[in-house]
Image 1 (cartoon, rainbow, N blue to C red):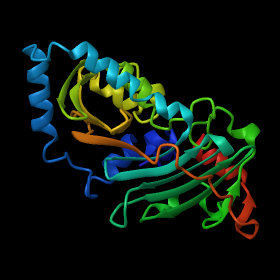
Image 2: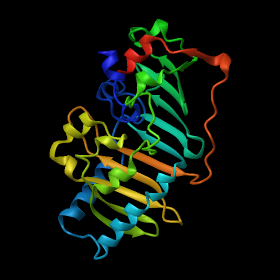
Image 3: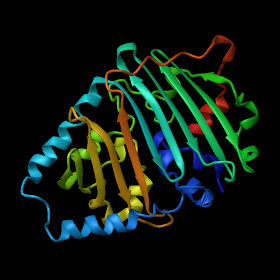
Length: 286
């Protein structure tokens, strides 16, 4: 296995869809298809094919599109789960800060990784912890100062989705981009929606890896999803039911949002826990 290749995808997408990690961690919990994913996907695809969308599906799509507007205010908490990996964090635009914690794999994996990324404009830090039998094979791992926060040079991470954060694009999951790709949607009860999304142009969303989208082929045009909104009509959950493709098993990718308007500023790491990031860290994520 090529460790650098497995770690070198976008940070969020790496957590959910890095193909090498998925293959290496096949025995990890969550790596297999969700028990209901195939059945749900089949039911949704059948509904789409038979034209069973409700007459008000246009209104349903507009409501779903509108549900992402509050995300643009940049004050929320979020989670993402899929393929046995998790990401959680907060965005607090008023303080120009954000934090994301990512876990990839577990103790049974050949390689596991946890990342704690903190942004407080104009600075960024990342703490990397590696585990598993292949940890010693990670290029430059002996220079990574594992357990310390690495202070990042902004000129070296500009445009880098692994380590950077764009305060002009505040949603790490890109749910607005995803909902714009909705091809069919129907209401499923109070605050509930279901339908299909064309994810073929959604790589920029951040939560779906481009290689996974390519592997889906024509299936990418009609991927089943469910969604929920809160009492104020704001998106609270989006579940994309990704079908099997290539070496990637069928799985659910779950994105949640909470604490709209009530998130807090990300706390900077203590000075005695910070070192300057070495070249090996940038090499690992480029």
